[in-house]
Image 1 (cartoon, rainbow, N blue to C red):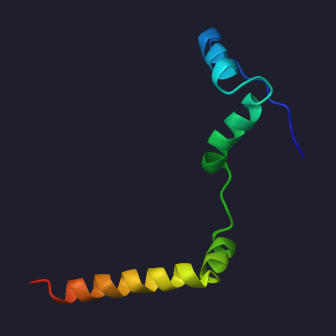
Image 2: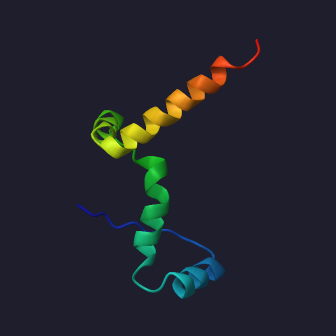
Length: 76
């Protein structure tokens, strides 16, 4: 469900948004900017989905193993 929000911005900010983003697109633009700061994802579900990506998991494992091998040769 959507909610209407009224905000106040300086005239030049509004003009810049209108010119750059376009009319009737400003709300979506602002929502996309704000969302990561106010809506926290379900990390457990996100990690579960990421783990099912076999190519990504293989790349992560390769990186982790290479990093571990590099550390084995480090002087203490």
